[in-house]
Amino acid sequence: SPSNMSTYQQCPRKFEAQSLTKEIKWQATKQKSRGTLVHNAMEKAMKDGYDAVRQWPDGMDMDFVRQRVDLVRQMVALGCSLHIEHELVINRQFQSVDWWDENALLRAKADAIIIPPTMDTPISILDIKTGKKWDEEDFQLRAECLLAHAIYKHPVVQYAYWYVDSGEIASGLIDFRNGIEPVRDIVELMNEMGQAIAANNFEPRENRFCKWCGLYKTPGCGL
Image (tube, rainbow, N blue to C red; front, side, top):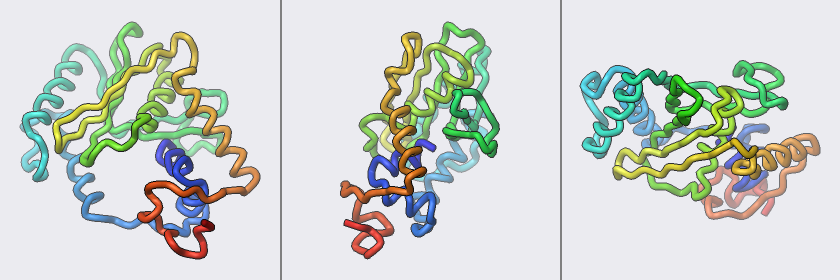
């Protein structure tokens, strides 16, 4: 998944401990719990309208939220199809497969994806964020763009992170008409991870997120 790939980029050893050996256990936090509430509210509003949400979580920029929700509803009214928590999965041949298929290679679940009725209009992928932007390479949504292109064949895919607390947008567009060059780093990382898994070789890598890692300053870290 894009999340696993981002973890591997930070530190292959952390990826192993988190996704393979399960040495690092997932733990709920107040931030994660609030994020779930925000996502649920945004998803209901996009499907049923802004007024369908009876109580919005505190701390959101509500003018921004209403504008974004209205935009999505307008696109649906014009004939676009909206898919919430949409599963995107491909195999090694870049063909669409089901989520739990044994030959699935790359999978992601998009917060929202808007598919226009014609190929000459870009697909839109949306991700709802509550914190601050740190993914300078937009890795997660570029990976989802690759998945959407492979599955739906649209030559151009656009993406946007919606920061609903600050009212900010980080967006981009990927044109696949000349091949996969805009996402070559993602494909190369997939190959690198496959080799690491086959060789069972996950070297620790120091990074700015070390002190938040479950292996920080333990013998299992390796640094």
